[in-house]
Length: 346
Ligand code: FES
Image (tube, rainbow, N blue to C red; front, side, top):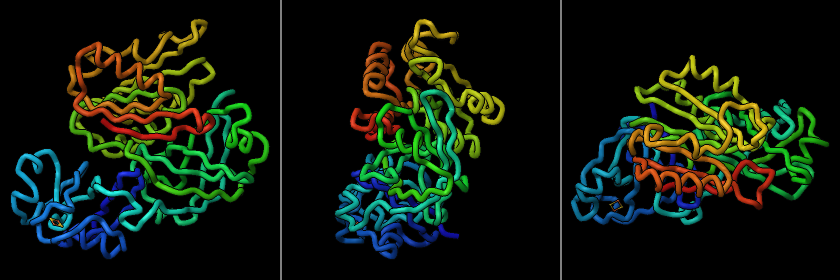
């Protein structure tokens, strides 16, 4: 049975290819008409050197000049030599354009639209070619807002294995998607989007996981939780979810359910509004300490607006416990009715 290999390009575009157990990743990419960087194809030059973010493989034959032992120990690999033992996620050192590929365009039908609160909506799409849409939990797509020339970026709030895909939207007065959803959207509407995109995705849990969500930044973390519930690990998972007002709080029931279905899962939430009825008033950073970071032994995934991302970075610096892994995604002001627009990892 072939394995699935996610090729993540530097511009955030991800393409998925199938790779048989005795086939090299480079051969599989070639068959899929994706030109990942290659030169010698013999494990000698190092041109194809990539970072394996997830999965196991046979590294194949190569010389030290192409890949040092130290690099191999940090997860670097040579796609021209490696053969998979499992599904893989590879960071490819080129843009998708240089590899003569691009994010895939998909078409779908709107199947549901729910107002979760005064400030947040959720919609679900039935993708025409669902088998042709693979994504990593945490990634996003660019959706063309029907009836406009605008596109907006939204993270999947659903897990990669669900038949239909869902998204969270913060309702913003005058926002392109907010206006469409509030005034024109009808079940059955045709929707186009491209993706998946983004370097903000769940790595195979190898240590405790700390998830930090601000507002609709909860969406990609819901997708990650769904995946972790399907493939539980031995590591604890803690989520801190912060919002501005009580009416921004959504999916608390979903999170409560994960207390039962995801072993080792705990969560807390806080509301910035001083008049909130929430137990914790204030910001996500107020619920972070050296313990939630496991003394630096946790992988942190953070999705929220830029001030929150900066506040978390400062909090981590103040605590003096640099996390083992730190992945974050920011909203940008240009996408105020979108869930996000940029992804970064550190
Ligand atoms: Fe030269 Fe892979 S292409 S080492």
